[in-house]
Length: 131
Image 1 (cartoon, rainbow, N blue to C red):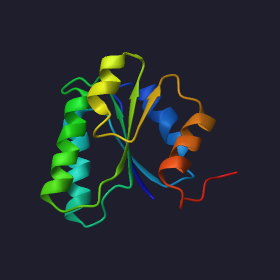
Image 2 (image 1 turned 120 degrees about the horizontal axis):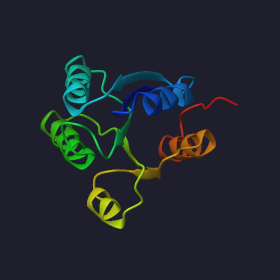
Image 3 (image 1 turned 90 degrees about the horizontal axis):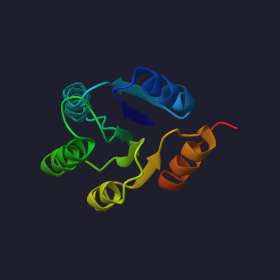
């Protein structure tokens, strides 16, 4: 499984990577520009991401705008859509409403490993999770 983790907080990015390290190969990005580069490169090599975790607040773009960008890129390139999890420290209802049509899940920080792995299993039932 190929995973792209996007968060501008280094500790949060490291923590997500550690939680998902045994689930698949994790690439990390701290900005929308960096994340888009990874996303486009993966599609170009015909090895798109299976799962993307996007922080709502990034320094150069909102997570909601990045989510829309990824969905558009997948559509333009006829790429199977990755499962997308929006991650935020804010539990604002308007974020959920704006993201619900394009993302598959919404998690509020701090994220617990068991909660994250349960959501991954729900979204990707064929993935073998660590015990």
